[in-house]
Image (cartoon, rainbow, N blue to C red; front, side):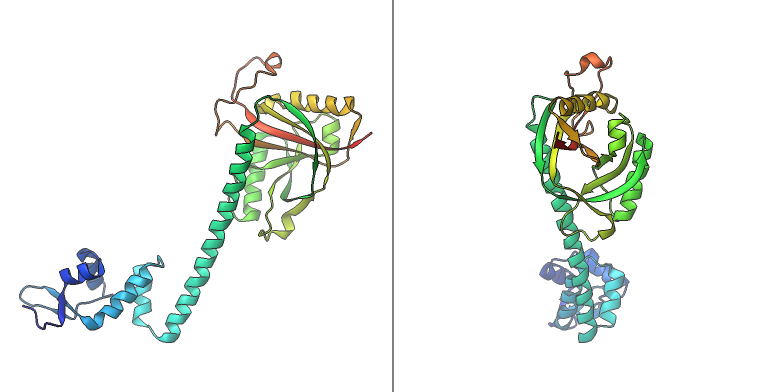
Length: 286
């Protein structure tokens, strides 16, 4: 039977704190939160009102998503100083998590905007001349001549960055561009935001005039589009600058398996899934 009216059964405590009875029994078994009194005859557990503060603390610590083992360590050594130090540590960790979530949210927002703009493109290919501002990127230099070398470069880039990346742009040297070595790239990049601390990887794509082409193509189709844009540059008396050009995939077939372009059917014999992308070549007026 209950030893005192100041004691509360495990069922009453469960309802009061909205904690499952099984959890309270587990806390007892591991020595984290033991009942004030256990009836020897019925084996019923009873808790005192003085224990409510400890259970409140345990429940509060659980909100921090730390392990029960760590909670037990904290409550066994709890002092104002220790508790303040713990809260400071948790605050720092939560701030890091929030910063990481904000970083991911920014990446998602950029990707959403990019894809939504690309979805508006109906008549492709489109060649345009754009005045583009300085663009800060994170850049990884490597010799890329195949899909496997690209994947290896991306893994190396991710190691430098410290996180996984979705899409990368590729750079091509002036020499490879004018010599029609369209399968050769000299680096990969991603957009850089103001929060990024990878200073050693930062590079600026300089402001200037760029002749651009938006297209839908498989990798094997790319020479056709490079020829289109280079012919356009020549016909309009533009001169390619001796700087890197860039190519980026905006939507690939993993997102849209129905990307099909009929504009170059005469150049290819097989219908395959294609990517929506853009080539940008820096130029001056000749």
